[in-house]
Image (cartoon, rainbow, N blue to C red; front, side, top):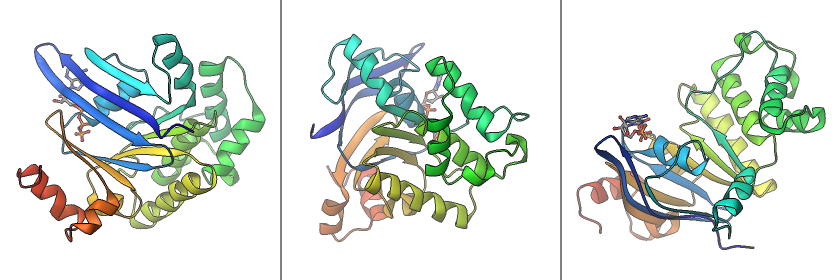
Length: 242
Ligand code: ATP
């Protein structure tokens, strides 16, 4: 097994004249839950969209498992599940039908077994006949997660998945991610503004600030430093930790 499921080397992204990602390099260990922390506009969504193949970098390299060439990367991207910040759901279709649409778009055919399995994993099986518009916010997040899980990804990319969830929803979602990671060997990259939330699950962190990756560190290294994640992050942003 590869030591890193994903590596990013010197990635840059320019929108017009603005460089929103500047020489970003990071390594996501296989089996990890990697927390990408950054304030508004830091570049998290931009980075994730590039990783998932939804946008192209201006320069730099993405290495998935050991895929290096463009053709290998396209093939390896099939092992990625991407849950976006603002999931597109079809409100008048049922939960199950939403997944079918997703399968038709990405695989060209419906597959009831994998749709049901994804619903089971996302804890939404009991709601599969419900129309998407009648789901609570937490259930919508689960549906979005189920879509990302449809093709049994080895790597899940989650862009602020807890946005808008209530405390119980956050706890349930966190447990679900830990279970997927432990029982299904899914590596996870997750972005959030809520440090406290990541602290419960992440094994590794990257601190992205104004398009630059200021620091990459494991949670065990932070524990050794006597700082909490919040204190450590603050010091990195203030330039006290190199
Ligand atoms: P947030 O936490 O607020 O969601 P983020 O870290 O996900 O922020 P991005 O959405 O990646 O940040 O945005 C990074 C920068 O890129 C911002 O300055 C944003 O305005 C800019 N940006 C993002 N998408 C585009 C686009 N399509 N065209 C031009 N600028 C863009």
